[in-house]
Length: 96
Image (cartoon, rainbow, N blue to C red):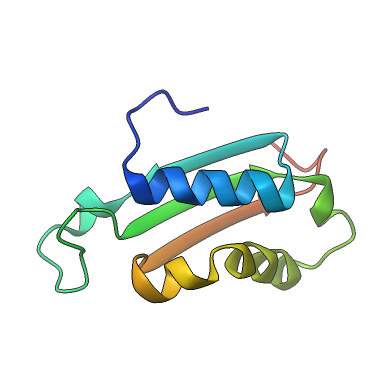
């Protein structure tokens, strides 16, 4: 797990993904600093994220189905707080 201090949006993303997908590995990275000055960047600075997770929920699921599962877990955040989300969703054994 990332030891860097997380803001409220990153914390909420992590909480929801843990609850819904029960990942064995989860990394939530706030990429917002790379987008400073963009009109879509939230005033709080949390608007662009990368999530990397490994979950048995992804076994036998297509890449698109996996991304939809992540997006569904974060649906209202994607509308209100998150401008961009990069997803790396893997089943156990696919890491590396």
